[in-house]
Length: 344
Image (cartoon, rainbow, N blue to C red):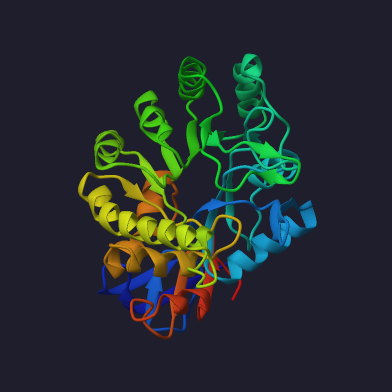
């Protein structure tokens, strides 16, 4: 075992620090800036993206993705839905040299309530049994797809309104059952149903494109989290129809107004790559949508570490340049130590 030693600027706070991790002979870590590892709080290890939309990935692809995330300085991944036979396996056996996996197992949605081919539908009458099975298999989160647009032969019908996937009473019973087992619920939501989901007790809001300040106040009062996944919406496209351009402009304005409100109310804002982005890219977007650079870095580090209950001081990531000047620096660390093992 090696005792890793670092002297330089500790981020996100920006103070001079002396850090030692591990035991044994001391060895200095290169770099001038250090973070306690990045956290991807909204990831799908078994889902890939093609021109036709999301597609399932196998275990080899999931492991390759994990390795890439580790090389980019990610210490932990919260997988919020996918192939449970892969994600729960990865969560059950943490390995040296790769990020820790916190897994939700399957997507919980009814027939026609999510992307075809990515999930096994869960009828309302099977919700509680499904939750118990996921938790028995090792899930520490349950991923509830709270709302979704109507689905046609080729997938979600673009431009159609989002509708709740389950009745309020059924969702309340699901949340109570999960909490009784000491686990938590992450809710995918992109409609006004977000307010009801928050009042029913979900622990984190995923996407939450129409969340309100009142919703954030309730969520923050109990220490909940919001993962806005801004990079998932992609950059504005000048070739889009005017209606779509206006919708994106309104979303940007909404996020820029509400992200500081979320912080003010005590909501843990988290950084998540979703199916298409990177942690570095999400930090950049958070800083462009109302958060300070330090707050955006916290979303990918200390806020996530605190909210997800991550422990240990043997995850270290260093940089030659200051990522506060350019978030893309986060994607190319100088050194990466995961659970005491240097992998880069």
